[in-house]
Amino acid sequence: MTTATTAKKPAGRVTRVLARREARIAFLFVLPAFLLFIAFRFGPSIAGVALSFFDYDITGEISWRGLDHFQRMIADPLFWRAMGTTLIYTVCAVPIALVLSTVMALGVRRAFRGARFFRSIFFLPVITSLVLAGSIFVWIFSANGPWSALMAPLGLGGSWLGSTVLVIPAIVVVGVWSRFGYGMMILIAALQDVPRELEEAALMDGANAWQRFRYVILPVLRPTFFFLAVIETTAAFQVFDVIYVMTQGGPANASYSLVYMLYDQGFRYFDYGYAAAIGVALFVMTLVVALIQRLVIGKQK
Image 1: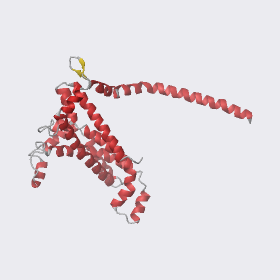
Image 2 (image 1 turned 45 degrees about the vertical axis):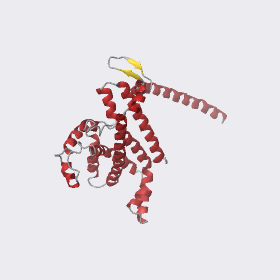
Image 3 (image 1 turned 60 degrees about the vertical axis):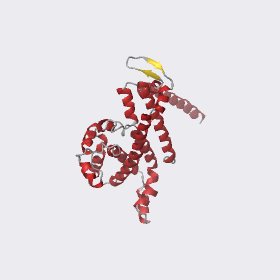
């Protein structure tokens, strides 16, 4: 017995040594890709934060400005206008996208004839170029487009993109159209974890559709809703391509978002330090909203 026990100890020690060696070899193989990821993922972010404290022009001259860019940003009425536009777009687009994604996911989660076809059709806007789609929506929302004719009986005819009041709803429509398919696919995957026996038991107990969703499905989807809320909020704060193609920030800066202002300051006026400061403010705002969503939606694991 003693001999057998003694023989097992060296064998276990050898196994641990081989495991450590294999781990070191695996780490060496992964290290180049990891370093590249760190350099290209976090390097530009750190450089952007640092740039917000400097003045930099295309000639390569750099001068220290400290908090001047942030003080200028706080005193800039255009910044607050852009922040208000971004917040209004986010408050409108994110809940609509989440609700529409949930409805579509519940509608196509079961296997039926044509389910894959409908899933593909609903997901198609996600992989469609927003530059191409935005050009088409410019015509749709024009005074002679089909949307104007459809809304005319409600007194909302005319060009929505030329109205300071209706331009944000028009961009929200395009933004939700381009995003709801992604949330739908994520929710369809999450719905597979809902025990079908619980749904059938609730149905036999007389629970209606809303009660089954609220007490059986929603608790399972809570972590997924938190994930989608963060992703959709981040995407809404970063809205740019739709605005660039459809409105160029107009009319009268009614659709002038924070990211479009960042683009304007950096690539039109070449004020890179101020543009970087706007980017830092956008990051902080996104982080704060994500933390609030974590407290409100993600209380349970």
